[in-house]
Image (cartoon, rainbow, N blue to C red; front, side, top):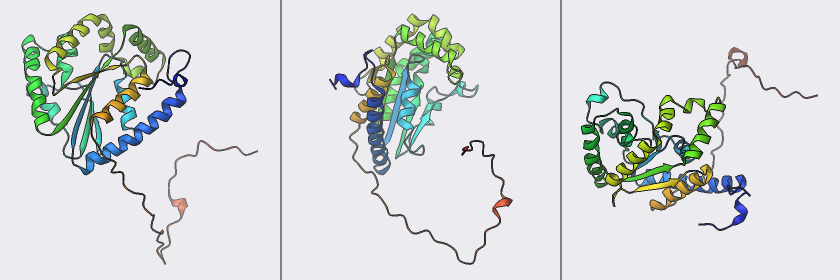
Length: 274
């Protein structure tokens, strides 16, 4: 925990300069984690759940933006198909679990059943209660199979959620994030609260703990989550050593075709030199 008051603005928010400096340091550590997972053939699953507009996607983006998508991949499943609705509930999620040397980030997960499906009536009572009984056993199986399972719940206040919803409406580049289901969630705030509390009662166990993120401050939530994630995994620095580039080989006697025969895209951004 830091007590340096210089890193905060007068409104209690993190200074942008400190935030980006700290984020850069943490992203270097994430690269070390990635290389360790790959070299040691570890299997890691991180679940991101929480209220709509709680900032899950922002954290996932900051985690992955410097990483190799072949090692660290994001799974964000849409509405189940007609066929998937006839399968064992966990089946479509199990298909995306990591192989050795992979880390998978679930942007929402099998906990949809205990959240939106429960509140919006997309599952029966029997399906819901079967999920609560089965989920801890399913996760125990994952952990026994040497999967590192980490679960985050992003908590946001009613006031902050409304502020973010309004910001999405105003910003055309973010408006796609606001779905009809998100708007309905505003009407069922207390129902979602109860669903979350019931879910925690059954699935917050000693070997599969829920970690709650106070997400009202996006920047703090991002740094805190990444820092905590790194603290849970005893990775080592296996970053490849710097290498020397070999000299560029030039083939003698080969004449390349005229460059005019290639089709280039228009150069729109041309510097005007007076």
